[in-house]
Image (cartoon, rainbow, N blue to C red):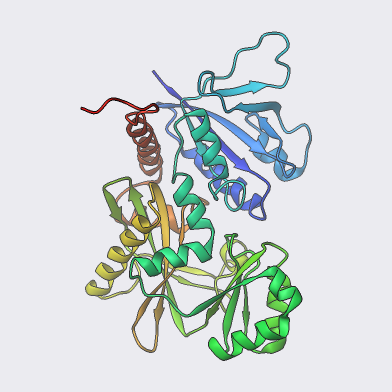
Length: 366
């Protein structure tokens, strides 16, 4: 019997458009011999809509986007219901949810917590890994605890920037210097990230980043190659061949990722065998540091001058567009796109089964 899978996309995030593109690729590629596929789009207000054309309608702003639905966080009656439930409509049964919600309100543990409350299977990392993977400051603290090498960085709150910007500038200049990167702690797809080569650019970078988050991370900039590794698994974890980003712009910003045709992905990355093993081993350590499950992409900085490897970040819900690194790296490793999606769904179902073994009430000792 086919399983019903609900792909959820859009959302209240600066990565709304990227989410729609990723979701469309996934919807097109899911194995129809195994899955009945439903598409759920969350608009920018946070309303949920169901329908086969919801992605295109969200892109064009064509309301209504579909049939209005609500998610029930009740483990005794989980699933979706349509807006008009006065007539005794039954919930729409879903076997597994596939959130493709990049950024806040989707990749940060919030929707994962909703699924956990309803006790339904879902794809990808759980609440803890998603929250830690989204917050770059917490992520870096966990990486440090695991002994993963990182570049020097500072964490700055928006309130401090607004009340003591001269002191913040002084801290950055004395402890990190130029160039440096300013990033919202809780954002992805390079949204709100800027490179600063001088004080004027640093001020502009902070003013841009604080529009997206109350917490910022400032990192030292060096001359690097950008290397990425895809990770797949639950308790048993595998790492793909590494790939290299050659950005069209000075660094791999939003436009270089999604708009610039001359950004290049080198798959596999031109690396020595020992370096490949180093990147793969560090990627698995990073995945375990946040207690990841299902999938993640781990990004590294490879110092062109010293040859040192630094971990940059983990992305617990990486992009799945036609040009995204995560599926391309697995394809180069031997897992085609459609098979990869099925494996990711199976990992979500397996994690759910494992969690059902946990007692929910106090039991007598054995």
